Length: 153
Image (cartoon, rainbow, N blue to C red; front, top):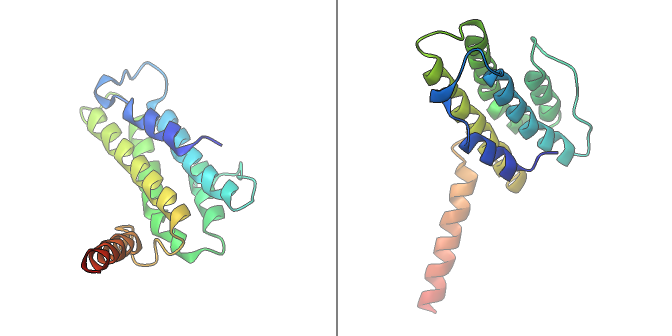
């Protein structure tokens, strides 16, 4: 299991502008990071991460596995599909003029997945409303209200 901090560091160090289409597969590296995020989720649930693929992507199979019995986890399904879409774009058209922008979007999507899953591991209800984390915002509001009450007392 790759810790979330290591995944975040790898995302921070990814330079979409410096992509060399003849070098190592940038889409594969980013897919690997996204898969590591979902592996953490699956392992935290006491399961072994699947090696299967869904629609040609292990990422989508991991999402399917992680969503079993956890309907709110489907909130990140489209993020996984967008990651797969951008991987296809990068692999099928590595010399495209939009390669850097596509890679940048893929980095942002993997980071979004990371933030959702790490938040979900802290707040079980995350995803029941949307990935804008209403539950986390209400925790912040509750903490602020508690602080205000302590100042008055």
